[in-house]
Image (cartoon, rainbow, N blue to C red):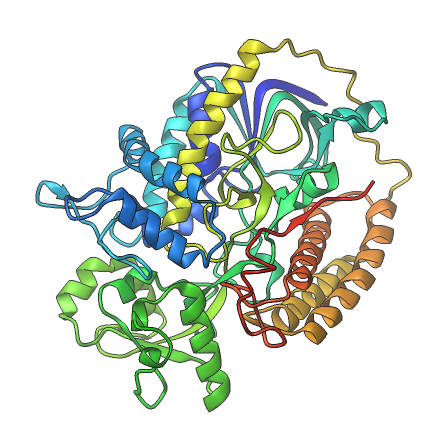
Amino acid sequence: MKEKSDFLVIGSGIAGLSFALRAAAHGKVALVTKREITESATNYAQGGIASVFSQEDTFDAHVEDTLVAGAGICHEDVVRMVVEEGPRTINNLIDWGVEFTTKGEDYDLTREGGHSQRRILHADDVTGREIERALVVAARENPNISIYEHHIAIDLITESKVIQKRLKQNRCLGAHVLDIGSGIVKTFAAKITLLASGGAGKVYLYTCNPDVATGDGVAMAYRAGATIANMEFMQFHPTTLFHPNAKSFLISEAVRGEGAILRRRDGTAFMDKYHPLKDLAPRDIVARAIDHEMKTHGDDCVYLDITHKDPEYVRTRFPNIYQTCLEYGLDMTKEGLPVVPAAHYLCGGVAVDLNAETDIKHLYAIGEVAFTGLHGANRLASNSLLEAAVYAGRAYKHAVEQLTANHFDFPEIPVWDAGTATNSDEMVVVSQNWDEIRRSMSNYVGIVRSTKRLERAMNRIKMIQEEIDDYYWDFIITSDLIELRNIATVAELIVRCAQNRKESRGLNYNIDYPERDDIHYKKDTFIKKNF
């Protein structure tokens, strides 16, 4: 089965939806998402979106905060561009129906770790849910957008793959996509393909990401020959709720922004030992501090304490967090919340230029799947939604220019060939390998790394990849098998990048190289597949 459109969008968070809504004014859009359209990291984002919206704040201050958090390797031109386009981009979201929380006639701006000013627009403590709601409504009402839920992309279709010849300038022609319900693999041909598939938190055992975050876009782009960058910089959110019945529930950075204090089990506050900003230090420092305190004192968690604040204020400011914690028997107005760090945000990804285009022509990437240079070695809180929305606008403008300036002739694209593959009843192979990859990554490639740990992780991942390759080509493809293949690829890329960076910078902390080395490693880490 073949589908043809002007734009193919893979992913339905703020990045994919923002692009699709713009692109729909210039052609037919096919939007593919592997679960329900609302199931994305955007939908779970609590804190907010950062932008300069007050008289006390400046673009220069936002730029400086981003550069400091990024530990020396942010691309300053990218940072300034994103920051300066921020207010206009926020107003676009408002025009699409996003309702941010106000205080009187102004927006209620809050502050998070690493920010010198209050510049976080939010919708109570469910900002992402509100953004997703508004964009989904707009997308469903647009006749030029066709939405394909429960469809998972398998691989990108490139011109070099179709004609079976290496090209100096490869071109993306779309993607092969599995209809999960029917089991049919469809061919989606498109003049412009956009990866907006999100991050890769599910590569780790403990993550606050949704189940869809299996690194699909990074893995597909790497297999197609695109350049990948800075995969060693996986951000661990410092405060994920530690409770046996809570699955990956994140306690927003905004709670610390409003004065919450991290404490050990005995009530001792400890962040003053690690950074002058104490509990408002950048995330990499807070996550390492918590990890160190837990290991030093043998505790399973630390506690986030906001009980010194007025209870009514806490309930009003964080209604979703308060109510969810109550459901687990925890009253944050009366007791500290048990928290641990968990994999949260991939600062690396598919390398793109200022227009979000990859080095494969007509293939774009925006959002968490992309490496733009904004985040450097550590993302500043609430810059991610901003980055996705800004780059959606830039990708749209550039893609439309490409459509206008070029004649698109498609070679004959073959349909998916399953060969002699058969159905498998050995799903235990998939679940076993999935578990082994995630445990290896958590144990060896987590917050604190070493040369030996990275070697052990790589050895194990290579063995698992061999098993996956055998299994992958022998049996009819399923969404579980696609995701397993992708997390194995992404795990390898994270380890390879971490092995190449023999220093400690931002989110990459290696006990064998504990110092930052600006002479040799004040640069990005690039990886490209050898064919």
